[in-house]
Length: 535
Image (cartoon, rainbow, N blue to C red; front, side, top):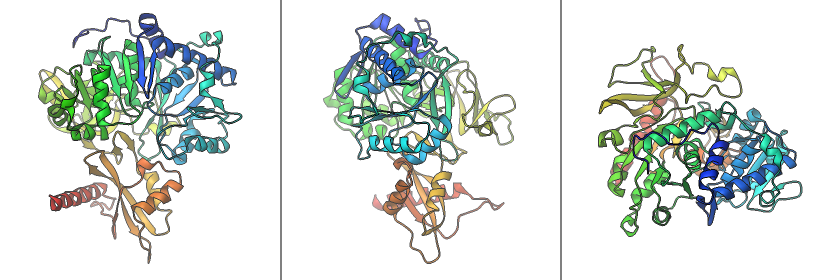
């Protein structure tokens, strides 16, 4: 097994398809994917995705088309992903939790022709029915593919597609490192996701840097229990596992007992936690019932010290944004580096500057806006050059809107996350803005105006809190009523406010602008008081 600090032995693949082909050549009969009762070798993954790609082309789809993904964390999601890539179809990394409000906006930018949905995704929401509704509404959508369910006439049946004969025509589709691998989504300051084209070469560079930083070797085993068609999953687990010829264990829904059982039975060496996974791990008091001796380390977004004390393996805080930067401490770093910072840039070629409001670099130890440039930085958002307005410094550093502080630890600059300049909410790793939520809330007849801010939450990190000004003579809706109102307008459930506070007027700064920080401070203080009364 590779040790920390060892240079990668294999040549870095130029594309995701090269990564899979190389692993098939080296590890044909090795287990690639485990999850939802299925096991799949690298050869089976290659064959099934070849067949699917052939079927997609036979159905009339063409290289350059785009495909919406609404699937869970299961092996067949990986088959669908690589099937699209082999057909030259670009995946759009939507979530199964997205509803019409988001899908319409994303589709207006990405012009999808294919909508892939998982019929048995564990939710009361009918994804297949939703896909049929979207196909009627979105002009570019010409195909729907149903996974793990019954396809209607005129729809593509995934189970039949993966059994179709391989067509040699797919061999001519060979993307290069500068071709678009997938269209990822950013939380976006407006609330609606921004679309980020990520290239094959960028992601493969991520993979090499991440493997080197963590010292991942061919015998490591990954475990992931959160959305799979998501930037975090791609960078931390999916593409590193595919490229390195390693087993990836998938959980469609996190359950602490199953999580530790899988570590024991699959001999997992590396996993990660975001939001509810971290709180679930900390709440589980039967770890001693499991043999987790294979586990080398865990990554998390915060709370590494508590998780390490609870589980008993090295745990590192990590940071990443879809626009490019990835940081984490090495598993062998000091406790201070692992627990009190989010580490160092995974790529030594990424440059970081922390800037004050005037654009000057802050001294070591002071907080400033995190700005970066380097090979991991994306080129631009889709949908118009104006979306990049104000995002870059004159010398090409991307302004993240996040506050960081630099610390010199063991001769290296490590960074700690100090907060955000932006109004985004980070609910269990899903980041979203508030403007579109407020616009929908303001359509409610009982609401004169609204502001949505982040409130602290022990399980998800943050949730949405809505401050509402009542319309004259009206009674404000409660959380359930407002949630139903927003769902009826196509808002994803994870964006719905989970607390409502009535207010007569919004606080303002000295110059008369809305003071969102005052609202955030107000709800945080109220939650602390409520917790104090309960203790």
